[in-house]
Image (cartoon, rainbow, N blue to C red; front, side, top):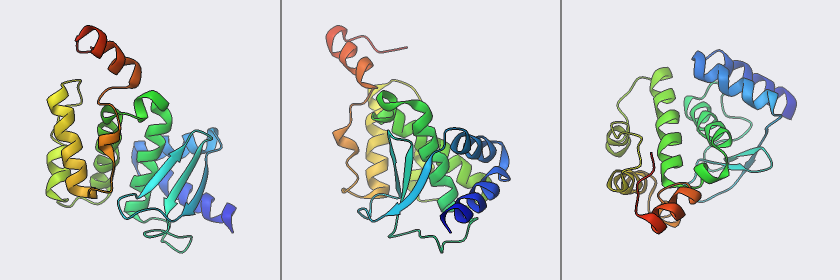
Length: 172
């Protein structure tokens, strides 16, 4: 069942535009495992260093339609984190990048107006302006709720955050 489910989801993802194809190929090439686990309401899915993606059972299960746009966009989002690497993925900058990639993908397959916080986040530039990243974090919490602990992450990838605090120079 698991292999059939995985194959069906990846086949659909691969046929959902260039980014879907790229994400499905990444999952296959890197043997990313996918499973389900219950998380807080503010979490749709999670990635793990051991190349796992876990979908929240509050929203998804093996019975979810293979082509569910929300599920597919979460897979794209989490694959993007795996590509970023741990230091970027565990930063507000990395989250903004992945949220923008995931929601732009979602809008490409389901062109609707999203939550106002998401629509505003999609207009933010992906840069190292600290005020911009603070605004992104606020918008993420406006959408996901206070249980989404974006405030626990550094604004920049950790090595860049440390360098900023030592030099006060904004990364390029």
